[in-house]
Amino acid sequence: MSSFSSQGRSKDYLTIHLRNLVAMARADGQLDNAEILFLYKVGKRYQLNPQLIADILSEKHTDYEVNTTKVEDNLEQLTDLVGMMVADGIVREKEMDFCKKMCGRFGFRLEVIDLLVDLYKKEKITPLEWDDVKLKALSLR
Image 1 (tube, rainbow, N blue to C red):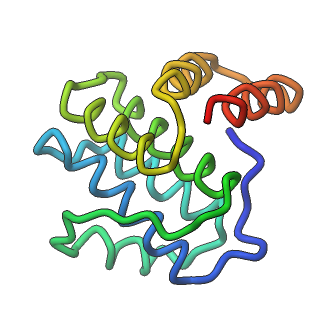
Image 2: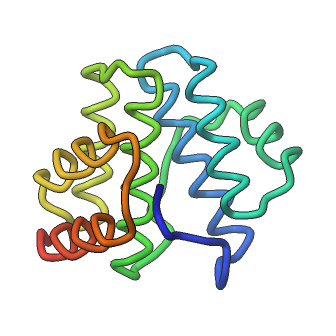
């Protein structure tokens, strides 16, 4: 959906990002197939080896961290977290709580979550729509 890529990203950054996504997926106590597929889709977007994703899935990692101070990187991670939250079509309270906590850690106001959820409800997002959402989200700090 987004225009984010692996360019300029360290393996450590991407690994933490994927661990955060897995923590989000497990927030409700279950890891659905749709969530696993979403994780592999994100991994493919970042040109990651599928084995790295499998390794992260097998970890018992439940903590999450913020590994960047760049606003655009924070938005990137929050966008993927919201994508993971809605991947199975059901937004559970524990998943929303997780997103809200991460939203605060990334320095965004909670309205950004609603903005991103609305974006994910659309089947196809144009680059112009995505740019508009990014500008709105970045203004909500």
